[in-house]
Amino acid sequence: MSSSSPITRGLFIMALGIAFMSMMDGFIKFITNDISAPQVLFFRSFFGLIPILIIIHIKGGFAGVKTKRPTLHIIRALLGVTAFISFTIGLRDMSLANGLALCFAAPFFMVIYSKFLLSEHVGLHRISAMTLGFIGVVIVLQPDEGIIGTGAPYMLFVAAAYGLSQVLARKYAESETAASFSIWTTGGMTLFGLCLMPFFWVDMTAEILLICLLMGLCGGIGHYFMVEAVRLAPTAVVSPMEYTALIWGALFDWMFWHLFPEQATILGSLVIFASGIYILWRERLHKEEGKIV
Image (cartoon, rainbow, N blue to C red; front, side, top):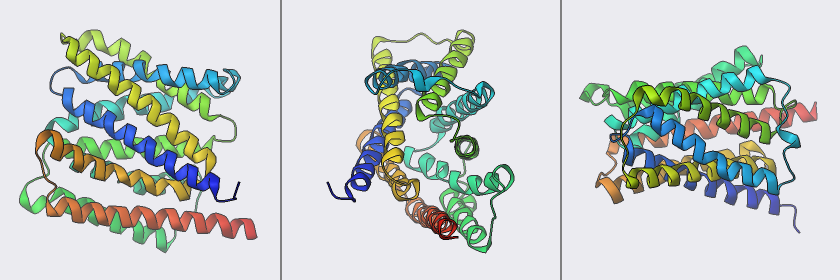
């Protein structure tokens, strides 16, 4: 087997994972106006546990689920809860493509968090990339046209919370396994959702419940594929595939809601994409220079 095979598989699996996660986002968009956000949270997390538990069992059991840092997983679960509820509420007021474009501001928040939590140097290149990314976000928002809407702040909060969760995972990656991150974070979100759901309960039809099942399964499978992709290939190599979610979002908008991406959304997404790719490239270059030293 050639040395490039793991990278090729990693890229393919990451693309597949993003496809499943995008389907999950589409299902959320379908039901976000029919049931409460805590209900969406619970069913996405609960049904998402099913494929995660099956895969962990197939991959060798639950030994890797043991954790030395329960507080870390509680914090990541809380971040997941607040981010997911914000995402669900935000989608009520904006298209899937616009929402996903704003969520991709996460790498810029990660640069800021890395400075304080990982003591990483933030040089001119990263600052320039962050500025470019901010410009991309402003283009998508179109503040001069009054298109910001009530959903945009929720999506920017999602980006900030997701970025913090990812930096915490990087900080403690050596002491925790992918299995522990997956099971405890998703399990914690399920528990929080179960506690919140009775206070916001809305009656559900069988059709909505089926969509919730599909949403959770897609989320669980997609999450596993993304973790597996990072295991097979360097993060800086496979992470750009996450931006294919923008394509899926635009496709689903067109197929199910007959919405076409505006020029500002396309331009802003391209700017955000370029900024994120540049940050990833600089991170990879920085790691390679560190190995040489």
